Length: 169
Image (spheres, rainbow, N blue to C red):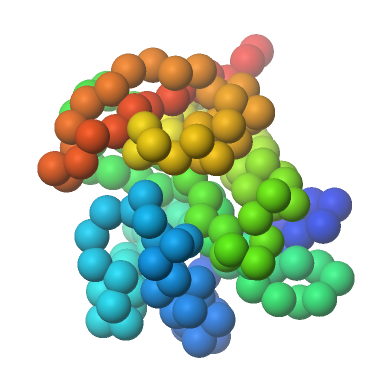
């Protein structure tokens, strides 16, 4: 399964993506608003978990490649959070784009494709987006994607805000 957008190719994360994924997800500036550890062992655990979501739930982060160059620009897609309790919706749309590709609209482009996949292919009716309240760029992407601010809470020992969107009939 893969999705092509105007500028991007999205496909489920595979083992062959790890070498390009590691530097993006170890960059302190890129990971500044993402909780947890960011050393290579922690990145490996997170990568394997993301790959596992595809097998278990038919969703996960897409390895997000620039079509023109074939370069990995980030990981964007859907995650299921069984420990999320602020709402009954457990599937989040999220994005992480490498610093080199910030401000190019890739998070919005891939996020839109992920939302379409959630609603059309998976038949989901609702999605959330969980964001560190200080992450102005991600908050802006969520709003561009039509998600609306729904609340704030503490999750995994971090202050977060969450946005929601529903499938429109």
